[in-house]
Amino acid sequence: MLNLHFAFTGHDISEHQQNDFQGNESGLERASEFTTEKLCFYSVRASDMNFLKTLINDDEIHEYSSEPIHSLGIEMWINEISSEVKFADAEFWIVSDMSKGILIGQMGVLRLIFEDGPRHCIVFMFAPDQWNQSWAAEALCGCAQYCFEKLKLTELCVALKPDDHRFRRLIQRADLKDRGQVIFQGSGMQLFGFERVAAVL
Image (cartoon, rainbow, N blue to C red; front, side, top):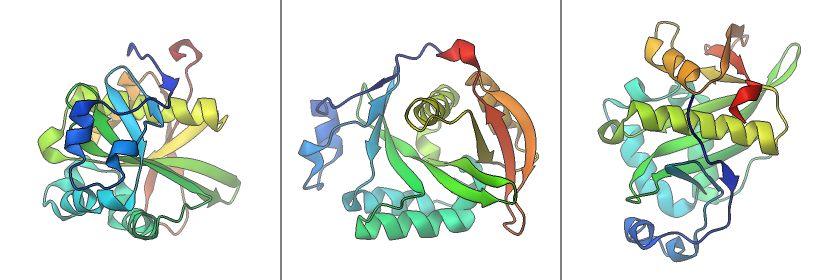
C-alpha cells in the first residue's frame, strides 16, 4: 500500500519549483492544488504549453500516456490551456516532483456520458525521461483520491490499452480495485473501471 500524506493545500512553491518554472510569469504565484507524499499537483496554465508540447511531440509519449492522448485528450488540453478557460466537465494538473521541482507529466479527469449515465475518466501523460513506476503509481493514486475526496466519487475509469499490463499493475499498486473493462460506445477508447478501496484513506 502506498504511504500517502494526501492534503489539499495552498502552500507556496519551493525555491526549486520556482526555478523550474523559468519563463512562467505567474510561476512565482503558483500554489499546489494538492500534494501526495512526493508529488505536487498544480492547475495547468497557458505558460505550461511548452512543456506539454514537448510531451505531445515526443515519439515515445504513447508508451507513457492514456489512450485519449491520441484523440479527445489532446484537443481538450490544448484548447483549455491556450485559452485558460476551464471546462465544467474536466480538471487538469501539471505534476511535479516535490523534492526537485521537476515536471514529470500531466494528469486530468474527464466527465464522459455513457448510456447508463456519466462516468469520470482519468487521463495522463508522463514524460518518458522522467518515467518512474513509483511516481506513476503515486500520481494515479493522488488523482484518484482527489476525485474521491473532492468530487465525492466512488468509482473511476482510466483509458488503457487492453494489453498494457504496466498500467494495470499501477492500478493495483495504487490500492484501487480493478472492475474490468467498461464500454464507451463510439469512442474507440478502451476504458477500465476501478473503485475506491476504503483502507487507502
